Length: 230
Ligand code: MN
Image (cartoon, rainbow, N blue to C red; front, side, top):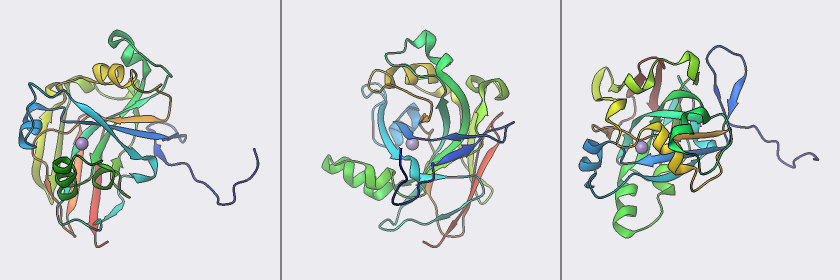
């Protein structure tokens, strides 16, 4: 392969216990995977199964970064989520085999232009501008499975300026990680470099310039950002 006319840097995340980084190629996200959040978004968790959308890998934002308040919104929201990173290729993966395809886990924050998302939902339009904008995919340190705590028994939480906004148990997910990986692999051939935001619990809410937003999951550390003027 020759050189590129414009140099390329692969988006990547820090991996616990090694200097090597995990290169990210695709970011998949699950919508409405906690019943209480599905209800707060006007959904019906009994009738609407979780669904998928994507963000570009270029939207990654690391722990400790400054996150610019995005343009074209007046309702910029946080969503703490468990992120699973694929480490073994597969498609049509059985639920029973799905966790063998997971390399590790991280804390995520699925930043959202909620007003634009609501308008897209109302009008049946794509979610890209509400979900896939620059700096919209917060991902903390990636913990290989063996170094992560027992994620299925962990809690996840999010604070803004020290005040708790979200707190729930990973076990409250409608579809667990194995179910998500299995279903996603029926749509896409999964590869190392694929990361999956697994949905947020109830308590999503607005962020303002100057806010310090911290997300955490037991055994996976924390992910902290300061919102700055865009
Ligand atoms: Mn989300």
